[in-house]
Image (cartoon, rainbow, N blue to C red; front, side, top):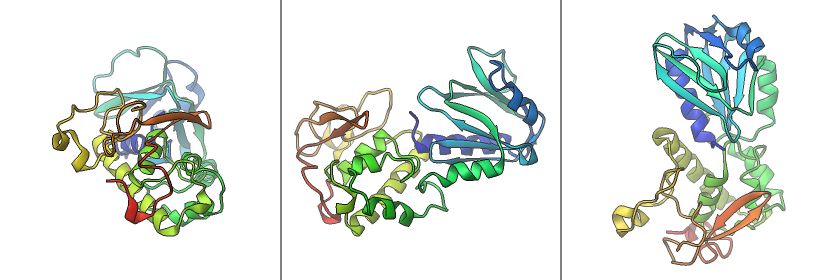
Length: 278
C-alpha cells in the first residue's frame, strides 16, 4: 500500500497540472459515473493529501476523495488523450495532461464537511504544516500497545506504512515490542523529527531511503538494493540478510496481520536519543 509520501507527491503533481483550470472528468469503467458527472467541467480548485488520503477539490461542486488501498494507481500522460485501457475508475483531463485512476479502494464524491469529518478521525500527518505531534504523543504515551502497532495506526499518525514503521524503529534502536507508555518524551521528539524528514525526502525523490551515508553502497562497497519498492533501507524486506550495522540476520514475524522486520541485536531494547543506531 502506498505510504503518505506517495499521496503528497500526487497532490503536488495534480495541483500543479490541473488547479485553476476547468477539467473534464469521466469514469470509463462506470463505477464513478455519477460523481464524475457532477464535477465534469468544473474548475479544479486544488489537490491535497492527508495521510494516505488524496482530495481533489472542485469548490461548490464537491471534493473527490481517493484512497488507493493496495492496488490503486494513477497513470499520468501529456495530451493528446488516448483511449482508456483496463478498468479506469476516473479520468481527469486538463489543459496539458490527463490522468487515469485504476483500482482504488475509495473514489467518491463528498462534501467539504464530510472531508473534515474523515480527517478528524486521523492522527497528525508529519508532512503537513498543520501537523501537531502533541496529539500523537498524547495517544502514544498513554498506550500499552507496542510502538510497532501504534506507528501504523492511522488514528495516531497519518501516512506511516510498513516501510517507514520498520525503518524508523531501527534508526532509533527501539525494540518494536516496546509499549508506547514506556517511550520517553525526548525519544518521541527524535522519532517525530526523523520521520518528518524521511517522509519529506520521499516526497522529493519518490522513493523511501533510510540508510545513512556511512552504510550506503558507495561507502561500504556493497551492491545497491534491488527491489521493486526501490530505495536503500536497513530492515524492510531484508529478512535473513545481515544487518548493515552489526551483521545479525534481520528478523521477520507477523504483527497485527502485517510483516514486521527488525534487527534482534540493534533493537534489543528501548533506546534513548543518545543510543540511536549508526
